[in-house]
Length: 622
Ligand code: ADP
Image 1 (tube, rainbow, N blue to C red):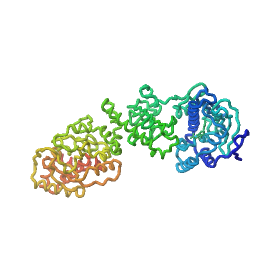
Image 2 (cartoon, helix red, strand yellow):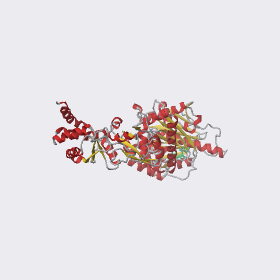
Image 3 (cartoon, rainbow, N blue to C red):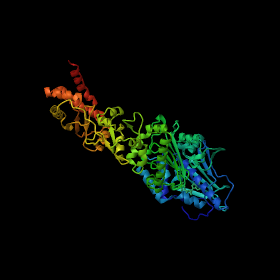
Image 4 (cartoon, rainbow, N blue to C red):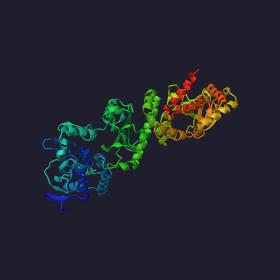
């Protein structure tokens, strides 16, 4: 039975709209995780109601109970399994109860049902917050809910709404003196934990700590109320930042850096972001990617918002709060919401600025940052075209001149030699391997600094770092680098004919694995190297594939042998005596393997051991 005659003094039973029934059914029967968020929803409704009455009182003096404290009271009776949430908010008339709690926006109900169907594993908290089904979430834990309310309008009577979450609800008259709403939740047997004080307090602290009105249990206020991020930065003590950080992250260590930003334009944005002291924090780390909590109008709308910062800042944790965000924003629409784009831009810009400031003001601390999070910055260089300029300033490199000290691209540029028009880098599997690379010979001879890249992610970074302030980046193993300045070539120890015979033998031994063999013009202290006549990028990807354990196709490269080196001369003389000499064969194989090994491109170093034993035996034999 339904009726439009809402002025009746009798209680009447009404039927929920079909969409509501569907939603209620799902809530009551399908969602068993995260049920605690029903309390967050009730409290956030109460907080909205308080906001609205506060607004009414500013504009309209004719309000019931103008002196009532604006607050929320949560009480529980564990024996009866009852929980109540009471507020002195705007209240609802009988018609409003029917309108607000008997229907649901068609579109959001549809979206909700669809979403539940397609993501069986999605957590209730994620979904409910997004679809504006807030109040109904109480039916995850309740087998009966009674709402008694009295509107702020002086002439309005108290009214009651009650439902067991099936197709029907009842509305009728009620006794209530003061303005506001009381929601009485009769808990299901399997939800009786929500009548335990400690549990309620835990939930309030977790989800509603920053609700702008006091939340009381008995005489005690449970919530902190004024959000730290809405205060002016100069009013906040360092200790308070640390407390917030601990609350958010469970990290016992102080964060490396906090950034507090509070602004009204171009967006309303209040945020505190933290950079943790470490990348890995051990046991208690929350292993999730989006570590930013998103609040809108002081209500937590997303626990793990991912789109507020570029992916490479995924180590940043904190809170973002904006009035400009619609409360029922869904995960899909977050990404495309223009306001999110503006927030993201503002936050990203601010983080870059703070990090660059840190590099100037506290190089030691920055060094710690770089050690822990440098890889993410390198990823950013590859991914974030827009902010590349800022990111390049943050990069730090080992170089042939820096020793253990890390060098910026700016420092590198400031000490390039006369005539140098390019930045040179070397890729290797480790810093030690890099420092012994034969490719460095011509650079050392000319006093040219070389960046030593020994990190897996460097290959990726280079895809976004083709040049720096007009200087192209070149891999030192490129075949035809034109290096500035003349350096006298080391004197060959063998004739051209001797060398040609060795080269011929090498080509025969290594076959398809190399493209050609030639005498090196640049090697000094090293016997051999592999050079490439293609651009460097392909080979960086090769290295990444290799480390990821994927099958790597080795592109044949040019083997350069150094005729001025004692080993090459000795091998050449042996070939002269015996073209098939097994020591020469093994020696050439080993030179080739050494070159791969130093660059981290060797697929199976252990396989070298038998050959090395044979060579050792040959050397030891008299
Ligand atoms: P939402 O809060 O997203 O609008 P809900 O289902 O949670 O959706 O609530 C529906 C409506 O019921 C609210 O918009 C509000 O008008 C009304 N309402 C719920 N709780 C209260 C309350 N404590 N006081 C006054 N109105 C309320």
